Amino acid sequence: MTTPCIICVAITGSLPTKENNPAVPITVTEQIESTHEAFEAGASIAHCHVRDDAGKPTSDPERFAALKEGLEKHCPGLIVQLSTGGRSGAGSERGGMLSLRPDMASLSVGSNNFPTRVYENPPDLVDWLASEMITHDVKPEIEAFDLSHILQAAKMHQDGRIKDRPYVQFVMGVKNAMPADREVFDYYITTVKRLFGEDTPWCAAGIGPNQILLNEWAVSSGGHARTGLEDNVRIDRDTLAPSNAALVRRVVDLCETYQRPVATWQQAREMLGLRAA
Image (cartoon, rainbow, N blue to C red; front, side, top):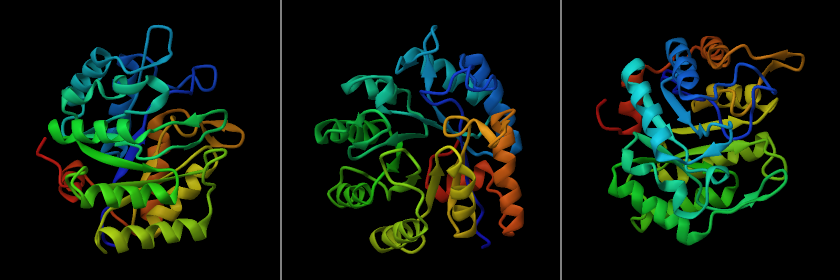
């Protein structure tokens, strides 16, 4: 348990609003301020979505550019990970920001059910997004909503569609997708190690009340952890989270409990094989 734990903060997402929690950062300025506080609290990756003037999700490259510029200025060394998620656009819109050359970008390699819709990731779009990431030297983070997504990432790595060893994130607790199941979680770890090597870094994210549960599973199992207001707007059942930083500090406390150091941004970049800041 001496491996430093990389903490990813998912600052905004596509769904949470000020009505859900006033601390959700919507504007680019709010996002930069919230991320800076989370960075100082211990986060080394920021997973980013952007919103339009009405607060709706968008894939507008100009808004992503403004956010990326601000984060690089105010959080030097922070790993900037941009979302290519499906709620913010359709088709190639979802990858329009990859030419900005962020350090990382999310990549969903298969489809699955969401609470009220199908999260569609058709093979041709997945292949195009992956090829754009290779073109612009962007490391994908594989968002695995299902076991098949881990196996598909392995196939894409083997045939060259994913250049470097994938960084896989297990997403559990999405309604109608994979629940937070400990035996499945443990099998995910076994599968990643079998397919990519024993020392392969991996991450886990839990949705809603499952966030702290997945944080603890990941920290105690030698993985890395995602937290933030995108996935969960509460500290507990009765209390809204006051900030992204407050959720990051919960993971830091878990690292102390399990005697794991929190990764610096320098350590995180080295572990993930990223270019220098």
